[in-house]
Amino acid sequence: MAPPRVALLSNPRSTGNRALLPRIRGFCAANDDIFHYEVEDVDQIGEALRTIARVRPQILIVNGGDGTVQATLTELYHGDHFGDSRPPVAVLPNGKTNLIALDLGAVGDPLVALQRIMTLARDDIAPHIVARELIALSDGGANSRPVLGMFLGGAGLADSMLFCRDKLYPTGLPNGLCHVLTAIAVIFTLLVGVRAAFLPPRPGQTSVSLIRKGKVQGRFALLIVTTLQRLLLGSRTSNIHGANDNEGKLQLILVDHRPLSVIRAICAGIFGKLGRSDLSGVHVARGDEIRIEGENSSVILDGELFEARAGQPIVLKPTAPVPFLRLAPAA
Picture (tube, helix red, strand yellow):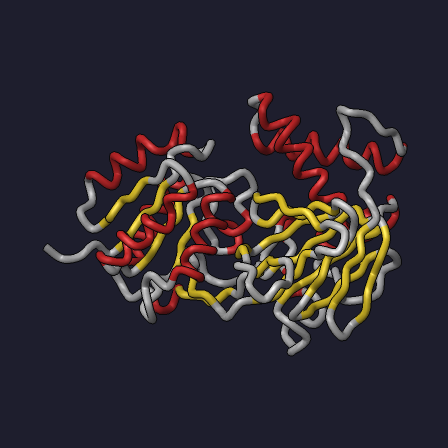
């Protein structure tokens, strides 16, 4: 029997899989060229990848929430389970925000995306492989093991993400509606300045340093560091000034905690002008090392929370390029 073309790593405990997984299991049962491995906890992902490496798949698919994707990328990069034959990674659109899946052209029904991947696997996948650097997050220590991801939100954005996750997702409302309600709450607090337990908090003081490029300090409504090329609202980091030069692999976007600054950033992002000209209160830069400091400054890397503490900054660096499978042609 020929080895499986595709390995699928699923986390049944992720929210999206509660309804999806029976369909996924049925599809895998009907296709002999899929090796399906299920984990009950992200701590089992290392063992899962060791097992998957033995069947040498052409493609590794991750089916789970943001935490599952992040844990898989971290273990895949550090574990060296596949040696020099690391397969390209595909991500099913099965998380809360799906930014990584969106960047790779996987949108809509996860089962349709899986079928598309199987179609690509039966042909030459080389034209569909793209390289993406990952963000390596650590405390900067020589012996620390970085956690890897592709999208980091901090300052007010992290507070808003936590508000949505802790206050709105448990209500059972659709994800899209939760995101809209969060945006309304953020805008309301920004404009009115009201503080209440049922509203997102005011962001604290944060210091962000780009090595060799100086430091920016203040209260920020948005702090984004990413290696993705496509974000929400149709904005693309490849359109941002400096994206094609040698200034660095990490894209940094900072927006001051002021209404006009936020409005300017949103409008510039929608119309593809972000970073192409100077905007008051909007800071856009690229670099290869970013340090985030501030007492209890929270950041979220692909769904996992981290905090900077006094004397212990969060240090971000890019990794070497990692192969991914893109499902749609590059725009």
